[in-house]
Image (cartoon, rainbow, N blue to C red):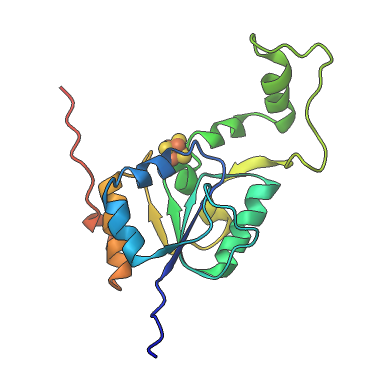
Length: 187
Ligand code: SF4
C-alpha cells in the first residue's frame, strides 16, 4: 500500500503583540481552505499542543517582552526549518517596545496602580512563578534568534501573507520587493 505523503507543517505563535497579525492571516478568507489542503497546522494560539513538534514554517507574531516569550521563541527557533518574523512588532518592536523608554518598575506601577481607571486599594502588583517576568527591555525577534524572513506590516497584508506562504510551499523564497502590498491611497 502506498504511504501517504506528509504535508509541510506550519506553526504560529503570539508573543507580545495584539493578535492583529493572526487576524490578517485569517483575512486570507476562503484561501484558508486551500492552505489547509497544502499544509498541516500545528501549534498556534487556537490549538492546544503541549509541545512544539519539528515544523517546516513558523510565523512569529509579536516582540519579546518577557521570559516566557524568550523561551517560546528559542524553542521555535530550534524546531522550525524556516522562521518568519511576522509583522512590525516582531521585526521592529513597534508598540510593545514603546515601554523601553521607561523602567519595568515604572511600567508596572502605571499598569497596576496609577492609571485613572485602576481600583487596587491594596496596591497589589502581580508577581510569582505563574506571572512571566518582564525583560528589562522589549527585544525584537531578530535580536534574539536568526530569522529566515521578515514580513513587515502592522499587520502584514493578507495578500502578502498568502503570497509568501504559497511561494515557500512551491520551494521559492521571494525577494522582499516581490511581496504584494495593497496600494493604499489617501484622499
Ligand atoms: S504588528 Fe501590528 S497587528 Fe501585528 S501584533 Fe503588532 S500591533 Fe498587532
